[in-house]
Image 1 (cartoon, rainbow, N blue to C red):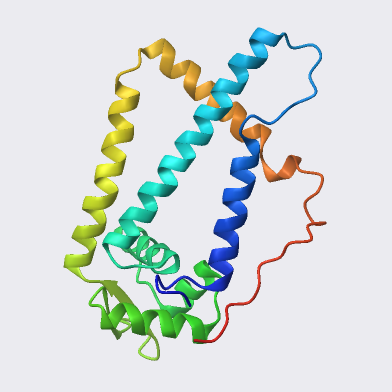
Image 2 (tube, rainbow, N blue to C red; image 1 turned 90 degrees about the vertical axis):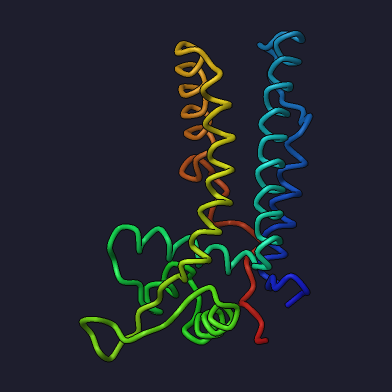
Length: 201
């Protein structure tokens, strides 16, 4: 692991994501039916989307660093908070399945979070052979404040739009999501870059 607690696989994934994202900016598309003026406008929109994702990534990174958490730590805490809010009892097995991690890696993660005071472990209320995982009230409050600030900024950015503008933006984002869906990528399954197993600490 590096000093931020990120695994090698997480670093590779982040670097690859940044590379693909940067490559999308000002990319040349062969579209002879699109005028030069429209092409410039479309490029401006694509670059605006790229800047939005960069800003979201930087904000998420700053949030994690302020809480001294790795990517996997934050993912685990977010899952624990979300599932617990729905009234479910979270077990180590459930968390391992969500993270797609081995039991050993999940145990190391839970040990780290427990030492930092982010979670507690206790006997499962029904299955006495299992454990339940709970986020501590102080950590849950901190996560809610961090996420709440991010959501508020997004909310008010949308609130400044008119009803017609919101409909247009919603339709555009839904169309963009459908257009880049993995179901439409004919290269999926033939990728040469694969995530590596998490190295032992």
